[in-house]
Length: 290
Image (tube, rainbow, N blue to C red; front, side):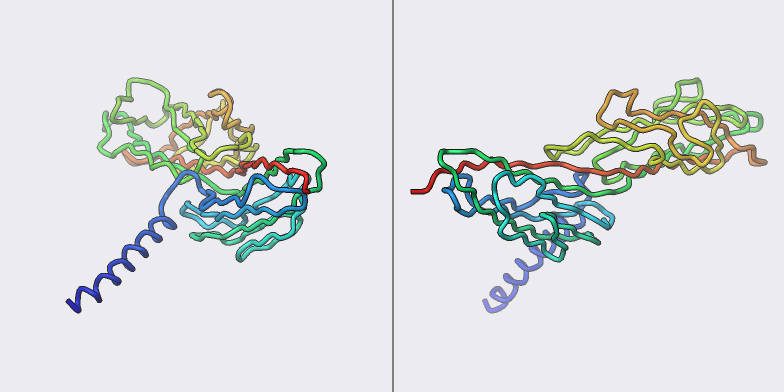
């Protein structure tokens, strides 16, 4: 009986720690989310006080240098207090650095304006951060003489933990099947990089990967025209991630670099930097006092 009393709290403690570890260290496409959101009151009188409390959680697998929570529109309300746990606060804004994996609290206190009649006000704030996504494809290359089919495997890495994903679209030709893909020395081929938004938070602003923010790294391959990347392998045009497919796509032709090997692997790595921002709003109703 004594052992049961000792082990039970220990078991609860282990489960609690395991749960926290999974929450902080898991991979989720919504990198920065709002958790434990609490609103004090939506209805108040002139000069009354209300508050907004929540936590900022990094669900990603990388450390973020800068996450901002900006109360850019407090309507007719006055901010009486803004607390940013282990972060800086200035100009109605919380700034958090080195966020991984971590949770930070935000606490805002507001004082309602004086009104003569029932009036509604909307308070809005944004959550913003910058991050990088990445994906890689491995393509067998054969000489076409000694070998007519590859023994090496074609593969694509998993999508990174980001609200923006990229898919590789290969041109269709006899060397491609549903299960494998390869090319030959001196045989150019086209690859398309199609970006898409997979984040699920509400209020996301228009997403664009600016010119130069998508970068390629190549092994045993070189670019050929036409190509949406320059000689430094950076994108030459912007990508509208939330637009039509043609606006979300970069394409380029590639040519294997000659080798003495009868078979080897060509690698295309695509890395893209992005700025992400979403907005949340609350509507309050203020009544005259007295």
